[in-house]
Length: 234
Image (cartoon, rainbow, N blue to C red; front, side):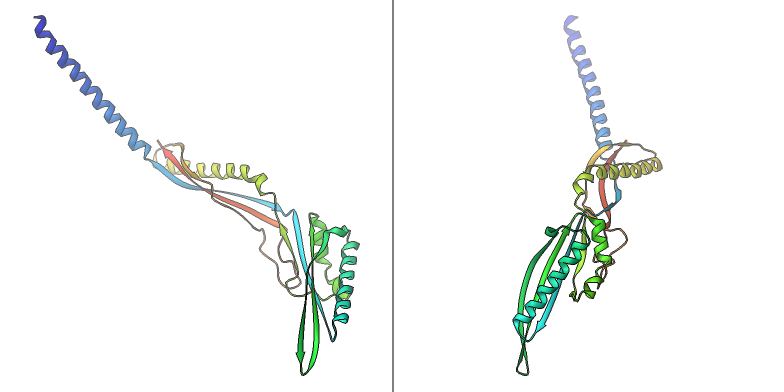
C-alpha cells in the first residue's frame, strides 16, 4: 500500500511542477512582450539668451606710390580707431592688432604699395559693443575706410550652465507626447527604455541681419535642443 502511494505522490509533484512551469513560462512571455512595447517620441526645449561675448575684426588699408606714405596713412587710421573706441569707454587692451600685409602692383610702369591692417575688438560689454556698431560710420568721418568683411560677431558662451535644465525640459516635453500617445492607445507610460540627448543649436533669435555696414550677427540668440526618447508602454 505504501509502495503504491509513492508513484502517485511523484506523479502529483510532477503535475504541479508542469503547471507551475507553464504558468511561469507564459507569464515570462507576456512580460517579454510587454517589455517590447515602447513608443519613440521627441522632446523640444528652447530658450532665448543674450550673447556674452562680442568680437569685431576691423580691416582697413591704404595705397600710395611709396611704402612709407601708405604705412603712415594706415598708422593714422589705427590712431583714429583707437580714439574712437576709447571715446566709447573701451579699455585700451580691448583692441589689439591681429595682422598686417603689404602688396605691390605695377600698372604702365607705375608701382603702388598697399598696406592692409587688421585690428580686433574683444569685449563682454555687449551694450557698449552695440553702441560701437551703431556709431561705426563715425570712423568714416575720421577718414577710416573699412574694408568689406569688417563687422561685429556676437557669441553666447554660457551653454554649459543651461544644458542640464534644458535637457530636463526636453525630457518633460517628450513624456507629455508619450502620455498623449498612450492615452490614445489605451495604455500608460512607463520608464525610459533608451534616450538620445541630441545636439544643442545656437542661432540668431531674429535671423542674421549682417552684410555691408550692418551687424554681422545678432546678440539675441535662441538655444534649441531636441531629445529622442523611447518610453515603455504598459
